Image 1 (cartoon, rainbow, N blue to C red):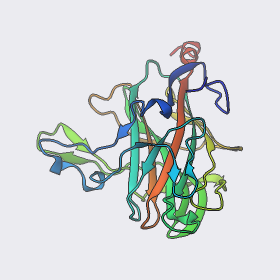
Image 2 (image 1 turned 90 degrees about the vertical axis):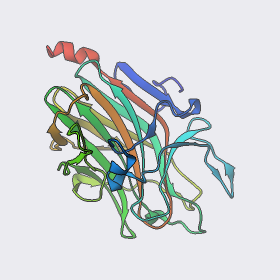
Image 3 (image 1 turned 60 degrees about the vertical axis):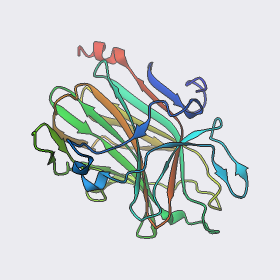
Length: 285
């Protein structure tokens, strides 16, 4: 990517990864549900999540638009069905429990298959961390609810309540839970925000997003989108007991949801995940 200290990015001292999708998908992949012995054991909700792809933003009227800073972005495209989901995940681990910061440039719009604006056809776009330390698995959820039931919403939400776990297979070693459903989302206090959305469905404006989270306290530290800084001090992330084999897990998930029977597109130009490893030493961690 371009040097991460240019443009809107202001990373913490230690770069975990700086993904520029001009260089490919950079380890981002589709999300598939857990299974054992047979793919038929995957929970139904996981069976049709659309994976990420590369896009140069070609449209029928203006040609190829590229990304915000180059040629390609990572694109999540739902099916043309209300509440269809597209999900991309990058799976890493962390070397020390310390502050994290994720920054990205993103945009979203419906598929330009009709000659109208169709702003309310995109339901939501969001980001999830999937983390684990020695005591707990923590899954901070954030989404921008763009529209619901055909009506514009324009507000940030979070999810705290853990969904039900289901045994997968018959060995007792594998479980699964579906946490991306429409239930359980709560409005972020003061989380209303209008985002720039251009006049026709083939135009798009890129937005800056910054999310801060502390692995030591397992708590949110920041949420900024464009010029708005939101108070996340009272947010409680989704938390559950630690699970086998997931020690020091640091996964990042991006997702899009359709609000109508039309494909919703979510684009990430670049994703920068940074940390402050020395903060752990200062705090005696």
